Image (cartoon, rainbow, N blue to C red; front, side, top):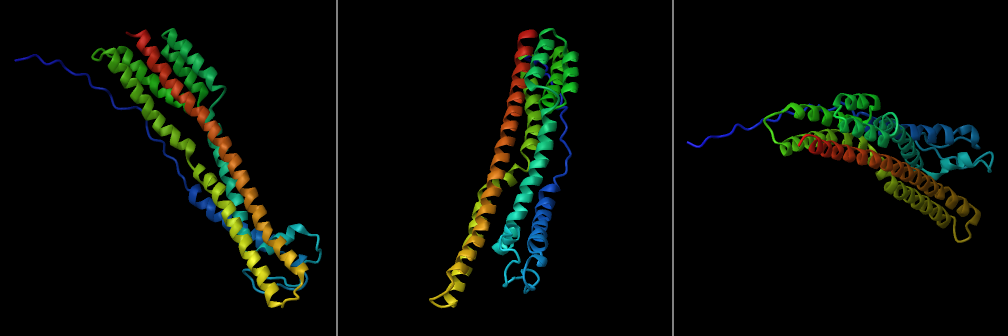
Amino acid sequence: MAETKPTATVKATSVQPKKSSNAISWIAPIVCIIAGYLIWRFILGDPSAYKGTGEGWFWPEYKQGLKNEQDQLHRIYQGGIIVPILIGMFLMVVVFSIERFLTIRKALGNGSIADFIRKVQYHLANRNVDAALSECDRQRGSVANVMKAGLRRYKEMITEGGMSTEQKVIAIQKEVEEATALEVPMLQKNLVFLSTITSVGTLIALLGTVMGMIRSFSALGSSGSGGDSSSLAVGISEALYNTALGIGTSAVALIMYNVFTTKIDSITYGIDESGFTLTQSFASQYK
């Protein structure tokens, strides 16, 4: 009978899934829309700024106009029911920008990622894996988390006698990939809200503008052919507040989205470089 060689078994990954709640992804939009309505209804629509009493409660109309016609803040209220939605979307941009800033700031860790990788490379070149692990504990970012997972497997492979160098390198690479698969989604989470608001904000603003224009021309038509052109101008200006709010909200969302994706790209580049560093170091040091 032909003799069969025992095959080495690779230990299961030491990387554990991160337990994190994403309740903010559904709580924040609801709270922001409600807050947007309250700002629109009770601050921008403050009855003390208008002549007379408004008709209705959910969407009161102050037909006698403002006490101070130069009061642009309260004039935004006349933009209609689309305005609180736009205010809510702007609040969402603020909330998710703060949430992503804190998350990505934590993922960047302490100090420069490039300096951290150079220090690890130096320790690996001197075959001091424990010192490299200590660097990971000091850096404490996403790159350090991936590097630490790879270094643990790296250390195990040094004393592993039943595998070839190529198999050991593959095992280290697999560990790095599994750690990366857990880190990267955490960085990209909730960015979809910013990207969605970037494109949808302007469309919703356009809807509010169109609705306002319809109301303005409808009022002009019902007043007869000799309608007041000044009332039409006021109605159009009120409708355009929707456009201004939507464009402003979309612009802020786009800027923040680009800022965060740039930060994430730098982190993922560092993660890729970490994996390359570990595999190349092991292949050259432990042939």
